[in-house]
Length: 173
Ligand SMILES: CC(C)(COP(=O)(O)OP(=O)(O)OC[C@H]1O[C@@H](n2cnc3c(N)ncnc32)[C@H](O)[C@@H]1OP(=O)(O)O)[C@@H](O)C(=O)NCCC(=O)NCCS
Image (cartoon, rainbow, N blue to C red; front, side, top):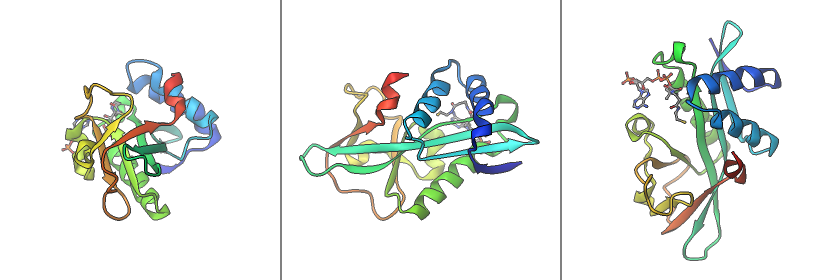
């Protein structure tokens, strides 16, 4: 098993893996769109005997303070997926930890995601609402529990109320 940066030759493998791991093709389309938009901040793959069995994508995210102060820039985690036959063997955790460690080294200030809090709390993610942040795609707060954040460098931002925007590529899939 290798964990490494995505290479162009992995494209078909990642596409197949995302289609196998998620119920629909949306995540596979999203990853293709992020690459095409040069918004693939960090993409890692897990490879087992030459086959892509896991992948993770991080993309640029903007937090817009309600105060009118300058925008803040961080990353969004996702999609992350492991092919069903290889799930529950630690590959997802390894991909997430490797990605977060690398982004921390690069000086990225924070990371947000939409996901199951029971899974992500092990990586120290907290509800983004505790930072007074909400996701722009969720004006009614329906997904507030799933929208989580973690500081990577320094303390959590003290922006006050802010609305978080994923890359526009998310809107087209
Ligand atoms: C979520 C996913 C990436 C995890 O990868 P994985 O390699 O199976 O997970 P790991 O083996 O690294 O971690 C296993 C642990 O996570 C837990 N876990 C896995 N999915 C979980 C979920 N949705 N909610 C809560 N816990 C979960 C397991 O119970 C296990 O817990 P334990 O360590 O206490 O025993 C993988 O299951 C997957 O691809 N799922 C389908 C796609 C998806 O939902 N992706 C996430 C949303 S973007």
